[in-house]
Length: 166
Image (cartoon, rainbow, N blue to C red):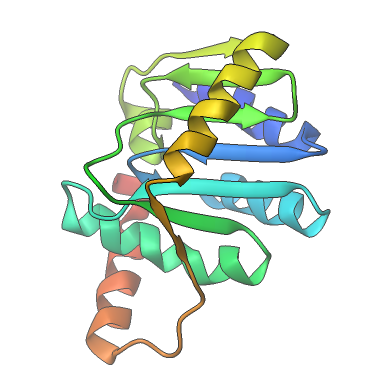
């Protein structure tokens, strides 16, 4: 639902301390991508946990096409490893928490019938922050990489072109 997109976008723009996201499918549109980069550039602690390997190779390629831009802006990215991460959570500062069925992708925002609970509650926000920190114990940081092989760059670029449909 587009209302979820607007709520997330507005909350990202208000963040002053932290934005911590866990999502199995990370294919942000331009507005969300810009909001994350802008937040990081204004020194908000932006972290994103994604699965090391999702159940869709195409989504994996599309997601990874965004990583260089995010890393260059100071966003910290992590791959969750022991199994597929299916949590869909967002922690903003100390008092905004979101949890629900929506991934950070266009399908969730515009095609599927997704739900997100938005709580303005310090107790819930702190509980989700602790869960996020615990999940980081099962993650490997994603680092800036040198130039990728042509086939990989082509695959990521092609998948990114399909991002509005993913």
